[in-house]
Length: 94
Image (cartoon, rainbow, N blue to C red; front, top):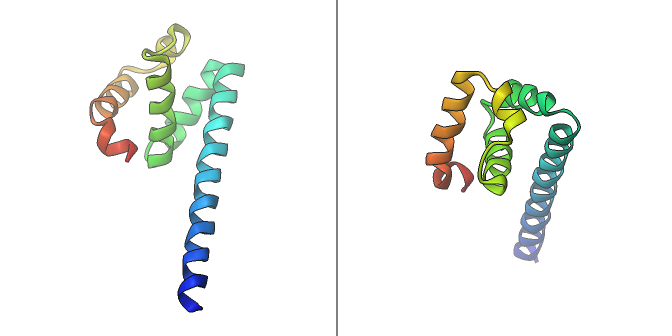
């Protein structure tokens, strides 16, 4: 009985965390579509957090390249961060 409750709690916690990451990524993408500069500002404010890097990498990988309007707004050190994370995306995205 206790094991079943523990397994159920773990499944519910995993589902919540997955839902939260998906919601966060949708917010990020909506902000980027509405105003490319907003996405970059959000990334700069949260870049120390793995979820922000993961969301940004999903965007980069989906488009296979940075959109021109986004690339123009990135500072050189941001480009280095993104490219470095992209090279190590297997470790970052897992």
